[in-house]
Length: 290
Image (cartoon, rainbow, N blue to C red):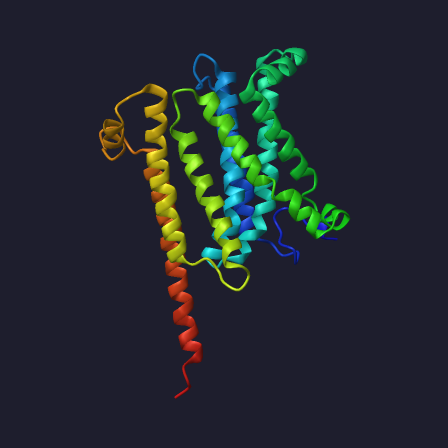
């Protein structure tokens, strides 16, 4: 039965090196966090730092799961879809650990945990994302797909984009002044939503190519740069011209928008290389035999 296929095998029952590598890799952040906690390497508040570390990786796994479909299409690597469900389930595992660590940090005072979730809006948003991931994890099996029907299942699992938005909002609000990673995640979410919009615009007859992906990267990257500048301008009333100058300067380090541009450029470059290779292979196949 397909439900009994081990995580390290593909749907044909054969060993999958890709799934094995990803399966092991998904446990690495938790392993390092546990090691750092055990060796007192997390500072004066180790439980709080572990809570934040696991929370950060939850969001990264959500975004990685969202990126699987665009990457598999742009890179012409359909087998990459094999690991999307695994990554999504692991994102829920990490967010469950995140909530457990928060409860532990509150000395298992469940009444206080519940009141804090209701009272603090960023915790309410985070808990809503937790509920959404729980629903997706519970319905991630092949059996649930059959029970719900493909259309209802797909509609439910499109909620992952809303979960991504909730996760970024929660991340941004709880990070206070340290907004580098939340801002980068917001830019990446814009890219992912933009890619989905392009897919809907193109329809089933056309695929999003490297040129469109490159243009989307420029929009997402520079949108992140100017969006961050607007945030600092509105929040701290700093001169807008100086903020934009700082965004384009290396004196303040690499800004989130440039990270978005770099990641998008890497995806586009690989996509262009794969498209070129596929074109060359097709020419060889069509070439008449001498």
